[in-house]
Image 1 (cartoon, rainbow, N blue to C red):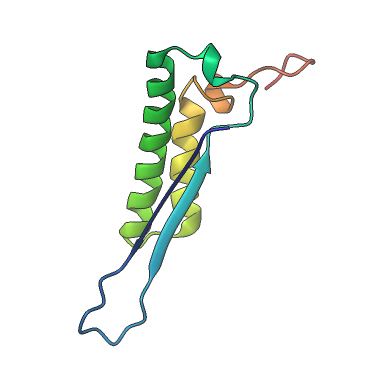
Image 2 (tube, helix red, strand yellow):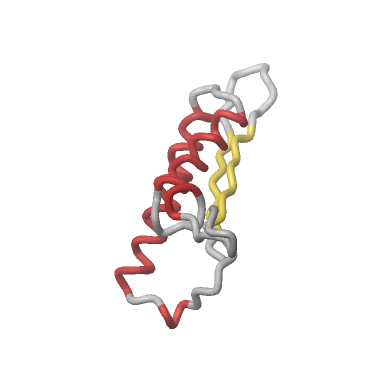
Length: 98
């Protein structure tokens, strides 16, 4: 499983508002690919795909968007990436459907 996490604390120096914490966590699936089966370029491609999804979701939160919008943004990027087993890159089930 590949996992990524990002968070930040808002700078509230001189502010009366409580600190807001932004965080988002994603994972690239729980498949059966082990690290020794990946070449150096493969691992980098997976990390790049995760970073793009994580950054996009985080940007939604940072701009004041909802958690639902942030998750939807991140998941859509993972679904559109053929490296991850979701959406367009999905593995078909026994009945031939994703």
